[in-house]
Image 1 (cartoon, rainbow, N blue to C red):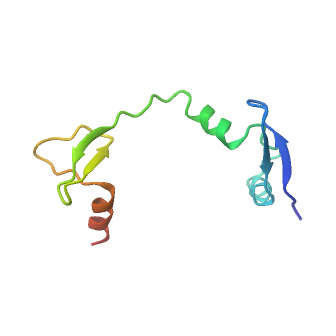
Image 2: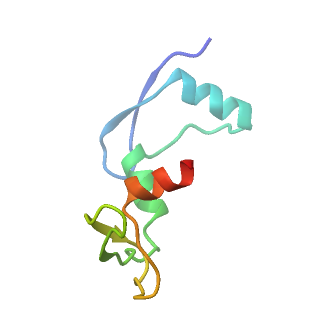
Length: 91
């Protein structure tokens, strides 16, 4: 029923594809207008007002590798890298 459409981004002028799946999603949500910006410009516009998140470096308490975390590590609390944290959640 739907076919991919090539649209032009009003922000950067690049062409982007409005896929049949995206069109179906828009129809299900009741959206009547096609997107006017490419995915990159939509993302940039959405995050424009947000400050860059400060990241901190710590040493993983489990494997000893360097980990980047979005909070200030404290001496009395262990910090885990993404892999070790995911492994701990599974258990």
